[in-house]
Image (cartoon, rainbow, N blue to C red):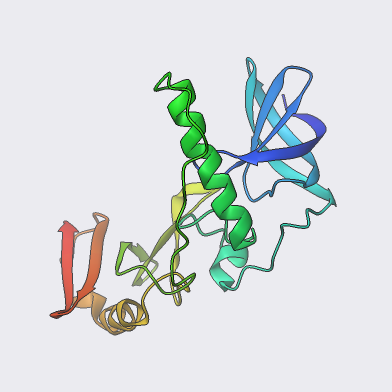
Length: 203
């Protein structure tokens, strides 16, 4: 049975879900930001539940428009906090590391120093995609965060080095040259000073 609650999101968990609390229940809600007031549909399992946003009743000031079309349109599972302002992302990551040290490591530590990346975008030098048949053709893409068994056809990735994306776009023109059985394949493109490398796994 599905329940509904209105909760305020307090923080971000290690996996990227927003965390809200209500009457002893801890709710993990994807694609929310600290300070959001949301109405959530969920199924509880004891004191914990993972919910889905039914309505955003009061957006957080930490919210920004994600630049990637796949993030919103295709529910891309490749990254989870593109909708949160970068400075707030850093502060939440600090807290995640400290909480892990306190809860798991049983160490009483201060917030760790965090060094911002010199590049907020286009920093990733490796991208692994699932390759799967979609009707008569093959597609290469990422899994949806809310439907992990499904993938969508990737066209862009703002967090990834453009050289990696360009290599993938070229490879996608020749997916028919890969092994022909129906098993799901995985392909990885990595760039370095020596250029781009492509590895196929599975089949």
